[in-house]
Length: 246
Image 1 (tube, one colour):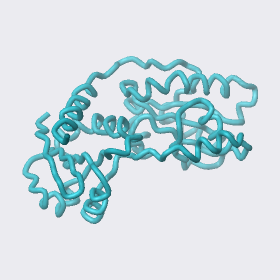
Image 2 (cartoon, helix red, strand yellow; image 1 turned 90 degrees about the horizontal axis):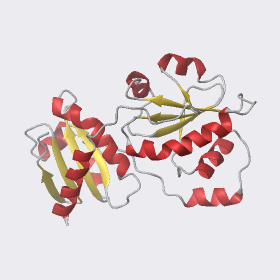
Image 3 (cartoon, one colour; image 1 turned 135 degrees about the vertical axis):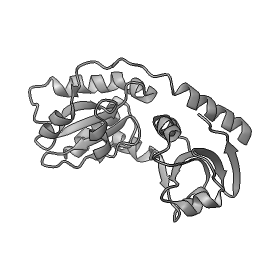
């Protein structure tokens, strides 16, 4: 079973290198660069999608986000909320400042605040509209409230440390990347690993994680890591290693 999963995961990693060079998104959402983003955020409410053009989840969300933008951005009351987007492949510094570790990441910025609230619910139009209404202090239908209450919280790419590693991996099956920030192969894998985490974010069977071995030397030494990078499937006390020469 473990060998089968590793094979599938390896195929996913390979497929993630197919990158589209064009922006497939329409123009209803306001597209910000770093300068325009910092000028606009805080003045009026914004619902922002941080994305990468090559990201499969972003492509699937695109028509829904465009429909949401068409509904809110073309009304006369532009002071209500602006639906916008930021391309993290061109605005990497801004996305780093916003702590964007996976795509797409959706954040709501209230008027008078530059601290965004991450949206973690379903990505259908009705749920997004309900979140906007809730963030603006408006009422939303009881049916939407019930659906959102039942929606599971997505798991993000977990950053494990010496202190948290064993407690976390004992809770279930984890696919862990041990890396060093200066490692060229690790840098090449980074966006693929984030995409893999996004792929499995709603899958309770496995969680995708990473360990920075320049900071967390104890856990890396424990797992006898002698080369960067190293990918391991960890299930409680059982361990499988994946040859990861990329």
